[in-house]
Structures are given as structure tokens and as C-alpha cells.
Image (tube, rainbow, N blue to C red; front, top):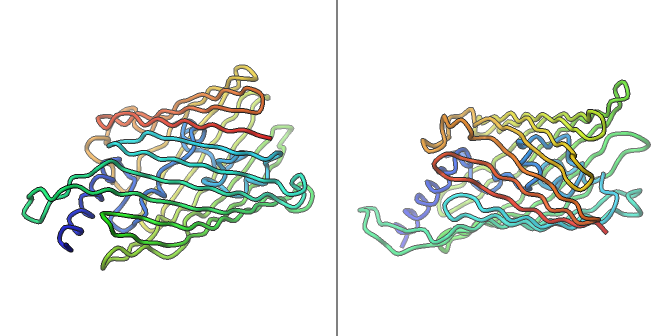
Length: 314
């Protein structure tokens, strides 16, 4: 039984590595490296300084303080190898935001049936794998036009071939907004997934700690430009992202961006050196207080990942 589980765990790890830079040998909880939210992904993952909606839960919890109304959102992503990612979240300003904002999120990553094999490569049935995240966040702006600060507490659960592991993590965020010669400028900083590792069977691996710096600027009133740098100290992985969104009409926003591949060389042969890998594109539709966002990211032979987000403010 132990041999079966060990082989299954190895197979699942290889499946994740097929996505290209979603996991490493030194880290576990690879689902924490999946970029959530259609809007941030379409902008090349350059969202640390832009976070002004419920996506802030996953990118920079300080941005929760920018919610002017209660907001609920749902996201569904079709990734690679029959893998699906779902997220549902809720943000609640306290006393119209004067006392800060509370945020709650639930995310689940699930993979289709995976074939298991014994050490001598004989078929041994199949197994399933899933990851779950529960999250609670609080953000508040300091007095006047001061910086926004946010903190998030996360409970993590991973299940693999009947074996499960749990852990907890903290996220911290800072957001600054300034006008430089009448041009709105935002600067963001976040530390994500700070916590102990997760233990599967006889092995404990660290969580994918990430430190991000970002900047965003509005050009006129309809165009936003953003840049992000994210580093994962435990794996040595770094990414740089550039993104933009342009409001064509009050009801239509177009987005595009690019995020570099991991510097640690974890990209698989299926995704390495592909001209469009790292590209993000999408759009946003607004109908009153309801919004629909879509993003797609090509990844060479692995296919295309698609994300859909639905949100409402009330």
C-alpha cells in the first residue's frame, strides 16, 4: 500500500510539473502557485499594485480596503491535463469602509483520474487528487490618504490518493496611492504563503513563499499600465510581468500582458522556448453592478488555459 501511495505521489508531482513552473522539488502545495482571477491573468499577472477588487484576496490583501461596496465573485479555470480551479469569494466593507474591509475566500483545485503504477511500472488502478483553501482577510486604510494594509489567514488541505495533509499560512500586503504631477500612481508590496510546510507520509515540504513588488499608473482615465516582480526565495524562482487594460467603452475593457517564465528552469519541454508562453489576453464586460471577465493563456503543446470570473457589487 505504501509503495502504491508513493508511486501515486510521484505521478501527481510529475503531472503538476507538466504545467511548467507550477511546482518544484523543494516545495509542496503547488496549487498556491496557480494564478487565480481572470483579470490579473489577462494582465500578465501584474496585479500587486492594481488590486482594487475581490482578486486582492489572492494577490495583495491590502487592496481589499478599496472595495466601496459589498462584492461577491466566482471564478472557474480550465487548466491543463483535465485540471480545474474554482474560487468563490466575498468582501464586506465595515461602516462603508471606515472600519476596514473583511474578505472571505474558498478555492479548490481538482484533477481528473490519474493512472497509478507500481515500482515495476505495472498498472495499479487510478487515484484522485485535490487541494482546498479557506481564507479570511482584513484590510484597512490608515488615517487620511495613508497607505492601505492587509492581512490574510489561510487554511490549506491537500488530498492525494487517500492521504491528506493540512497546513496554515499568512499573507501580508501594503498598497500606496499617490498623484505624481496629476498622474495616479500606485505601489504595491506583498508577502504570500508565509507558514510551515505540509507533511505527506514521511516527507515535509515547504510552502511556495512569494514576495512581490508592483507599480501601476493610469494614463488618461481609460488606460492603466502595470508591472510586477515576484520572487520565490525557497525555490529561487522569479517572474516579471507587464500588463495593461484599456476601457474601450464603459461596459467593455480589453486586457493584455506578459509574464516571464521561471528563472529556475522548471519549465517543461512542452512549454519551454514557446513564443507565446507567458502571454495573457482577455476582456471584461460590465452590466450595471455585474461583471464578467475572461482570460486565456497559451502554453504551447499543453494547450490553452482559460479562466472565467463573475462578480457582483451590492
